[in-house]
Length: 153
Image (cartoon, rainbow, N blue to C red; front, side, top):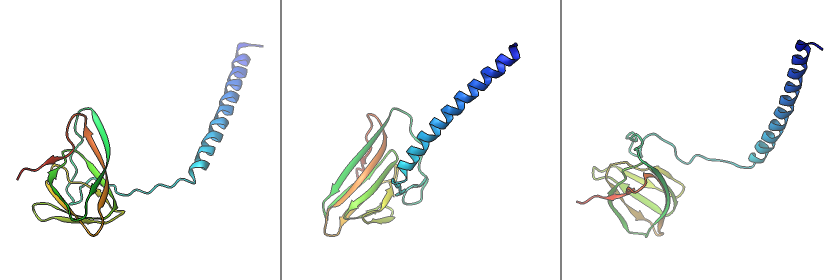
């Protein structure tokens, strides 16, 4: 057997092995996709602007720190004016919120609503209605830095 024949046989064996590997990977991927068919996803809110239409700022530099926080605001209670220095998003689980800026922009939030918060723009709100407002908030902050700052009036 000459060198060319040995190279072709070796190449054939390699292709056969790779083909078998590909079939194995495809079967595993098909099983994974089949299992995922029962899982659904729904984008609740996605935007490059905050709720008042202003563009979100670029991400900050530093060590990132993500926080997921459940905030309960008793019915009739007000959130003081505050700012968020980083991208923040919320999803209202129960109750109702009326959010406003000092300039008069308002947003009413009902259960199931997602909100892209204002960044570096003062805003506050009131829990309206008969039940406490419960909002799940995701802060994309920087480790060691506050994600909410009170506005001193």
